[in-house]
Length: 190
Image 1 (tube, one colour):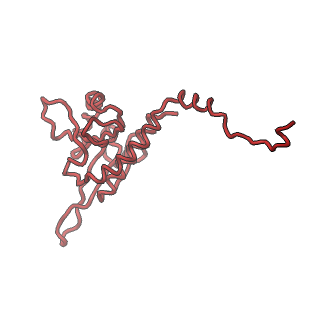
Image 2 (tube, one colour):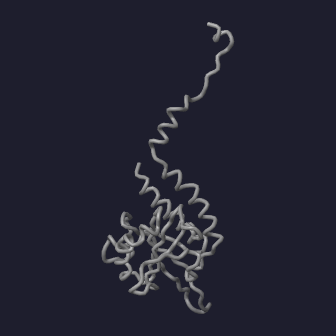
Image 3 (cartoon, helix red, strand yellow):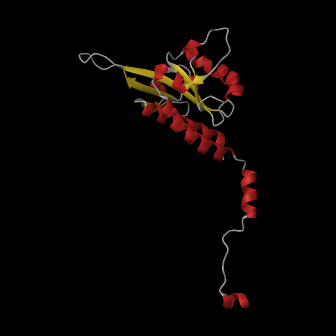
């Protein structure tokens, strides 16, 4: 079983849930989906996995306007170690997408950090190293700590189970004899 692919899909579903809770609509448009042409990306390899949008505040007399945000989601156990390598690949997409956010999901955040962290390439000075901020701290997206806290509890339940080694599970099955069959006293005496 490809647990890395599964972790990535689950991370994407959790991030989608967070955005929906914040009032956004969402559509998956990533590399392996059929709707790549709708997103308008020049290079299929640089298409974000999801587009989210939310109605912007406006005047009642004008047609409603929506804010469109491109999101690329990745699960990484150790964000700090993976970030430089990931951002080399992902930052090329930033030129094609005005509002592009890279969201990293982890079940092992550094102390004091959230399970959902974001990189906003527009706010990185060229001479500085890449850094993440907790998703709820990026006020542009209007996502609250309480929502992040609820989804973090799911992250901490799901991902450790998927990270277990299959060999450990096989040993546990060998030690478990299964259900014990009880014999009636007459059959036990035979």
